[in-house]
Image 1 (cartoon, rainbow, N blue to C red):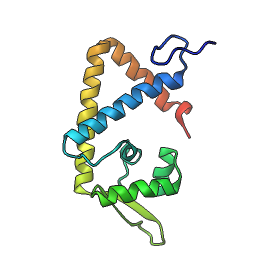
Image 2: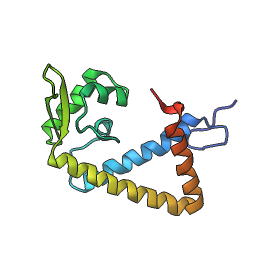
Image 3: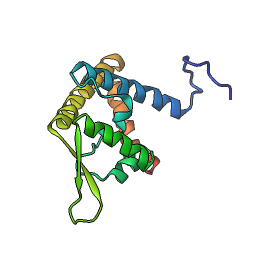
Image 4: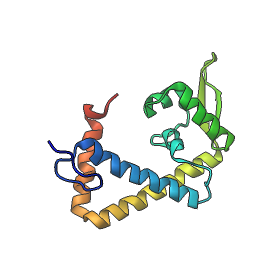
Length: 152
């Protein structure tokens, strides 16, 4: 199988690239939209914490697993977001040394804006692809989501 020239998709492209490019485009759009909305201190790496289903009430180790990163790297992101006022970390119920992440008011505001931006992205994709093709794409992606293909 020949490798397609960079930037020129062909029907021989593998699924990884076909999924990665649109996902990164959506993440870039989120960061640009959030920065424009006044959350100008957020950067691409912060999305590892803020991505769906969100960090509120979750332990840092779970967030690290979701993001596919080390606990140390996740703790660096959490420290950054805490310093910026988006999250707090508190003791988990039941005592012990376990901690959980909580969104602040600013963190909840980011989550709300992210949903608005994602609805805008879906509207744009629907416009470009057409209602029927967009619905089919979303249905296929939901099937993949619910399948064992995406489980850790």
